[in-house]
Image 1 (cartoon, rainbow, N blue to C red):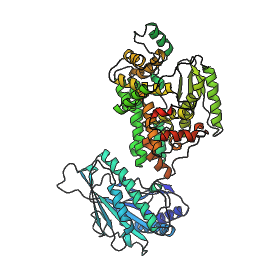
Image 2 (image 1 turned 135 degrees about the horizontal axis):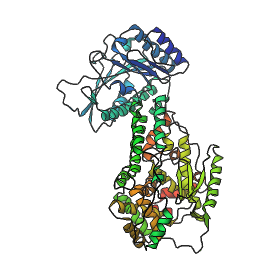
Image 3 (image 1 turned 90 degrees about the vertical axis):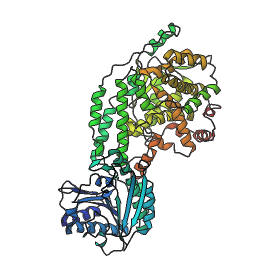
Length: 630
């Protein structure tokens, strides 16, 4: 039931009761100020009463992450119609659940001699001495203490004096609206640490909103399990399930900006063959010159569109965080395109993809020192680009058996070295040749990982899952290399190449030029000149692209995740990072995400379980290639 402007009168109470009977959501905006939001039948209602005697900026927004709340002015709260509305809601939901909780929220008045910056977070819990919900008070205290707010000290107090709070309407006694002993009242006051005077502190506001949303859900979860006839499994189940049109519009606009460019497409040279020939002819002494595609976008104009999207209007703290971080990374990617072939490019790349820490560098050097290069075979069976394309099309057809919509183009291009997936399209360099024995690994990498996660991301209600959430590249490439191992095709030279990329990125960051890195790869690590050139091209393209270090980094993080019992299947839900799993879990509990639509074929292979078992038991990443099935 939706309406923009509704008077708080007796008809409203009847309309709300009727909507709840029909399992409909209730969304009403009151004239003047205030609103009622009930996402679905739930045995609690959050209440904020806006005081008449002083401004209270930011306070009502702190409960907007809850699935059931009402915001009302003090003058409207002190009316018989409002009391009837609360009474109607509580009695209806009590009859369904066996109990009902009124939760009231407000801020305390700051002390008159307060400093400009409050460093402590104070929570005052209030309840009625006549019928307190004793079974949930300890869980509420623990949940509030778990809030991470800039490492601030958190102080709690518990008061059973129902009338002691400063901002209450004294003659509105919610606990006396009904004679039922199964209706409870709980109040929470917080000091206004999120503002200075009437100026909101946005970062503090977001932190407190996210922490308080989680803490209150835990409190309501405890209430439902202890006082009602329901037994929810997880407190995240109590969050919003409906996705507002505003959120969908913001999501669509964010994805529309990112869909207009692909960073790899814009920074990958179009003259790889010519550059290699010239470099080889110079006996590796003349710095290669790389040419790039024209940039059909204006990064500044796209940034203007990006920051015109009113993400700050999102009331759900989880979705707000996802979209804010997505906008931040998209802005940095646009900056990379603008800074292509300048000294600023590598610094922007490090902001997006990171650099190389000592641990990662040590692992890479260990691999290069312990894994011997494979002896070149006398005869290799090579596939032409057209033959590889046909294999790719056959694999895509196999995936269509799982889902008929898995239908993506494969095209040969003159301006692509090797293979590249962009926005679901597989592009193959028409002059490329592929080792037949390694083709399955490449297909598992590109189609089984990048294309499958793109497809599964497209199936989600949020487009960020296909366009790529912040820092998704590390997990994407970690999964893609793992896919090569799971199809039995992660060979020593491949692992050495991934390790060499880390060393090359590290050298580039520390000031080495193209020729110096090339010599390091050929002289110190014994790479063939053309392979060393390709590694250098990937690292130095655009002005210094640090992305290639994440293949090894992502694989190591993924192995650690799996050894700790992490679920591999979940990671194919879209283009996500490991750090997003807590958000994925929450959104799944809230029934806002779909299950994985297409499962990579290598997760169904007969040897899958034994390969995963060996991975979990391995002490070193090197064991993934030693004895690998050929």
